[in-house]
Image 1 (cartoon, helix red, strand yellow):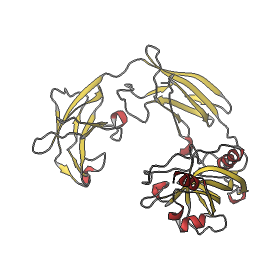
Image 2 (tube, one colour; image 1 turned 120 degrees about the horizontal axis):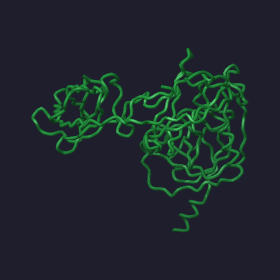
Image 3 (tube, helix red, strand yellow; image 1 turned 135 degrees about the horizontal axis):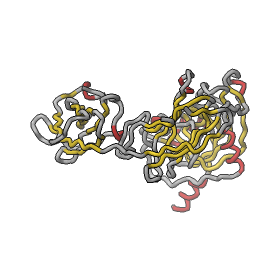
Image 4 (spheres, one colour; image 1 turned 135 degrees about the vertical axis):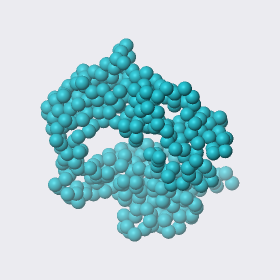
Length: 127
Length: 256
C-alpha cells in the first residue's frame, strides 16, 4: 500500500511495465443472412470476465467485404460481437455473440451473421 | 447604398431584453445595447431583463466566453453566415469575467455543485443580436435569440453568497486535508507510456467519493494525484479498462 498523509508529497512511484501481453488476432467477417457482406458493421471484443470492458474502448468497423481483424491478447477469454444500425430509422441488427476462450486456436475467420434485430440489439451487452 | 448599409450596421439600438425577445425579427442582425442580468448555470448561459424576469432569456455567446459550468449540446442554429464580432477585452470586460467566474467553495469533498456562482452580474451589453427563425441557439438549441457580445460596460454585481446553505458552502476557499502521489509509467526500455489510465484506490472503508481517483499519464508518461485524502492506496494501471493495443498490459498495481 502507499500511504498518504496530509500535506505529504510522494514522488517517484514508477510503473515499469516489463512484459506486454502478446496480441491475438480475431479475424471477423460480418454477413447478412443471405450471405452478403456487411460493410460498416460495428465489431468489438469484450472480456468474458468483464463484459462491459470493450477492448480498445470503442467498436471497429468492417470494410466493404465485411471484414475486420480485431486485436485481443493471449490468456484472456473474449466475447465477439457485431451489429449495425440501418438507415433510415437506424434499425438495429445484430449477430449472436461468440466466445473465444484463451485456449482456442483461431484458425479461420469468425463469421458473424446478423440474424437478430430490434431491441435485443440495442444494448452493447446483447446476447 | 453600401454607405447606408454600413451606417445601419454601425447604429446601435439601445433597447431591453424584453423588447428584443418580444419582437426578435426586428432586431435580427442588428447591433443592440441591453442592460441585462446574466443567468449562468448548468446548461445555461444567457441574459434576461433585470426588471422583468418573466421575459424570455437570450443566449449569450462570445469567443472563449462563458463560465465552465455552462454546457451546450447540439448543433448551432441555422443562420446566414455573419461576420465574427470582435470582442472588446477591456477593463470592464475583465471585471465582468472575473465576477462571473467567482464561485462558492464546498465545505466538504462530498459537496458537489454544478454551478455555484458567487455573484449575480448585471451589465450593459453591446453586441449583435441573432434570431433563429427555425431551430435555436445554446443548450439543445432552446433559445430563439442570442447576443454575440462585443463589449460590456457599467458592470455591477449582487453578492448571493447568503443564498447558499452555509453548512455546505463558504465564500472563502476551504482546504481539505490531502497529499499527493506522483510518478510515471514506462515500458521495459524506459520509454514513457502516454495516456495510460492510472487509478488510486483507497484500501480503507471510506465513502464512495473518497474511494477511487483517476488520472492519465501525460506526454512524458508522468501522472500525479494532486489531492488525495489522507489514507492508504493501491495505485494501478488498466484497472478500469482492459488491455488494449495501445496499452497491452494486464492490470498492474504498485505495490504488487
